Amino acid sequence: MQVSLSISPSKLPSIFPFHHPISPPHQPHKSLTFQTQASPFDSLKTAGYLSTISRAIEEEEEYRKARATVTRKGVEVEGYFIEGLSVGGHETCVIVPELKSAFDIGRCPSRAIQQNFVFITHAHLDHIGGLPMYVASRGLYNLKPPTVFVPPCIKEDVEKLLDIHRTMGQVELNLDLVAIDIGETYEMRNDIVVRPFRTHHVIPSQGYVIYSIRKKLKKQYIHLKGKQIEKLKKSGVEITDTILSPEVAFTGDTTAEYMLDPCNADALRAKILITEATFLDEGYSIDHARQHGHTHLFEIIENSEWIRNKAVLLTHFSSRYHIEDIRQAVSKLQSKVSAKVVPLTEGFRSKYS
Image (tube, rainbow, N blue to C red; front, side):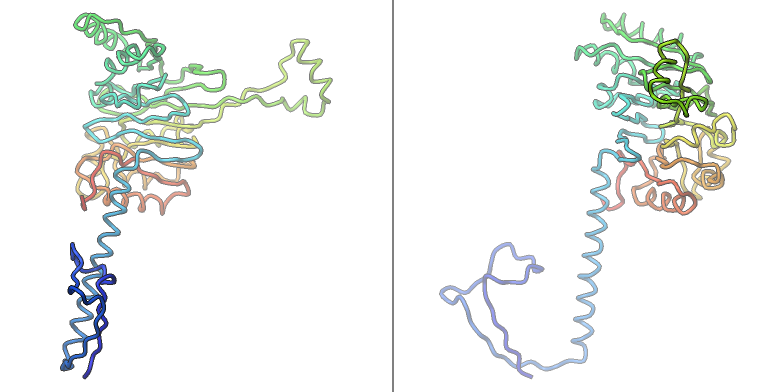
């Protein structure tokens, strides 16, 4: 059969890996006619070639998605931007800039230095190791001394740790170190307070719930007019109730047992629950997770009926996992809860990279 091809040096198909255009000198356009024998294998070859190209395009798309996930520096959920690192056994520091807060300090990532409040959940180095550096950096940049919250049982040791660095470095390390126990309340701002809640790790630990505060007119005064309400207010009558709304809850390292404690209901109804999910698949058992003071994804799924949050941010995955493993785990939990499930994946690699 006859085939007629039109060759133009400026319009070579882009899929061919030519680094330089190939064009005959002084012949910018030429029409060729030649004979070819039709073969029964031609259609098979073409189909195979197109299939190879199709697979390559699909893999390239997967690679692009994976790279985009790896380089993303945070997530936006329920009006909060949340960023940081949380890799099991390596480093955990989760930052919520709107609250000027960092949950645990990890190795003190530079983004944490600008936060005024740090909430330490327990004394393992991957959660508290960067504390002296954080306090020193605040001083170096002439930022006001930070407020650092710790479980009461480790306050004395944290003070000793900081004293050692003061002596070795001959520097001032200024901070407000606050020992806050489960059930106690601390006012961070006039519209925000924090309360710790009980968690279960292999050493003493606690999580934290951040609450927003708003005033609501008491029911018995709802029928009154503005001037009447103003008169009562001036006379010293308390006309409003204080309403605490749980905004963000952070567990730190813990078993899933915290989900079954009625006293922790606020953590499970906060707008955002930031919880660990160290193990994601059958590679490690639930018993293994419990023995090491951690949570298995299967346990979160099992107890998903108690989750009343609008969003769940999963953290602290084992470093054995890739981005793709984490995505798959998220989809498993997402199918069980109405809350939006999002992973914090900075620090993890794609299997395509």
